[in-house]
Length: 122
Image (cartoon, rainbow, N blue to C red):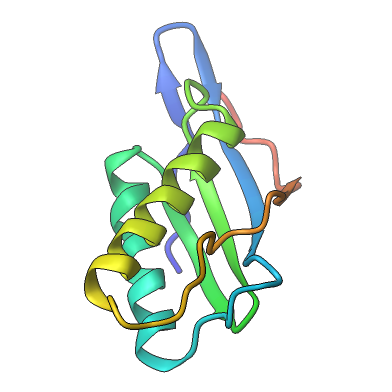
């Protein structure tokens, strides 16, 4: 994996990385096989549109894991909401007969900021 350079703005340098855990609703059947692969693709596509870089992405039947480098202009909550919405929409479109239930996602998520080396500022 190639290390990303810090984001440079006229008056700041940032590198915000967040580990996200997005659980599915307990009433849903979760995602398996092609559905899980398609959900991960939807996460990647939405993250690119939000100017986020997914450094790692993985999923299990009951939740998704993302490690995202985010711009400082985006809040963690707004990124999570957009990713959840994009995945839900894509899955309902691509798998109309899958019993996703009324609500695919659980009402919570977990976010951890990650520690790393402080970039040297010239």
